Image (cartoon, rainbow, N blue to C red; front, side, top):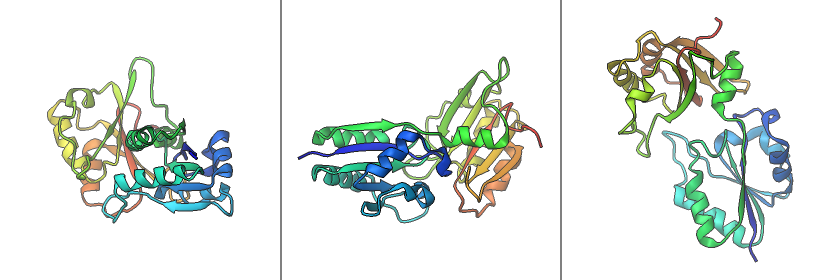
Length: 241
C-alpha cells in the first residue's frame, strides 16, 4: 500500500501567501513534515489528528541530516498515508527538493510539486520595487551564499554576479556576504551598487535595510541577528527611502 507525497511550498511566512492548492493539501494530509520557516500559523491549516514532524535545517543549529529527512518521507508514504513535505518559499529554489524526489522515485512513491511565492519576490514586493526593469535590469539571478559546509561556494560565476545590469538575489548569504563582495568588487561590480537586506520577510518581524553592497557587507560581518534573511543587489535594490 503506497501513499502519496505533496511537496507544498509555504511561501516566505505569511499564511495569506499560501496558494489555494497548498491549503487544500495541508487540510487533507495525514502527516506533515515541515521546515522551521514553515511552522507557526501555516500549520493551523493541518487537521487536528495529523502527525506534525519538524525536520527543518537552520545554519549554526543542530539539524536533521538530509538522508534522515528523505528516509522519513519514504517511511510515512509507505504506510499509505497522504504526506505533505512543507518547504519554505518555493520548494524548487535552494530547498534540496531534488534529493527528496530521488528518494521517492527509488521507492516507487508518487508525488507532486506545488509551487509557492519565493522570498525574493516577497522581499521585492515588501520593498515596493520590481525585480526587473526594461533596459537597466533585464534579468534576475538567484545564488546561494553557502555550500553544504556553510562556506561561500567555490566556482561561482563572478562575471555574471558582478553584472551591474542584473538584479541578483543571494539566499543564505549573511555570513559569507563580505567575502562575496570582495570578489564581486574585484570582478568589476561598483562598490556603491545598491543593496537590500530583507529579514523575516512577510512576517511581523520583517525588517528591510537599504544600503550598498560594501556598507552592507561590513554591517553583516558584525551582525548577530538570528532572523532569516536574504540580500538583493543591483540597480533596483535601493528603491524609495
